[in-house]
Image (cartoon, rainbow, N blue to C red; front, side):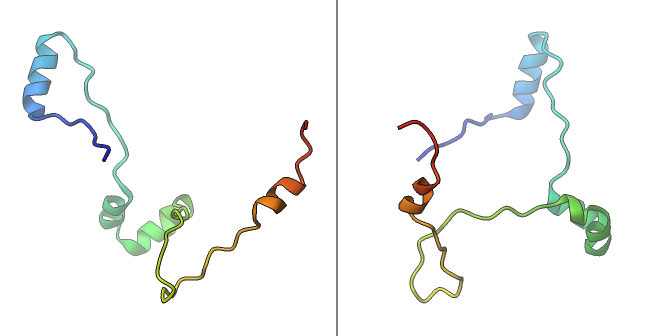
Length: 88
């Protein structure tokens, strides 16, 4: 499977990078949604940031027929290409 590289010792990386003259090695970023919700509380989070948070649809998953979730309906390839107006 695919793996991502990671540092073995972040403190040693910081020391080595600084020793080599690199100072801009840290990135500031917004705290994750879960942490923000814990910080503000669920009610305040919903009031202040509720309209700024979206939960995208997940990828389709193959499940047993007994699964409660509704099945995905598709138009099919024939329908997808009937409206195509490009060059042939």
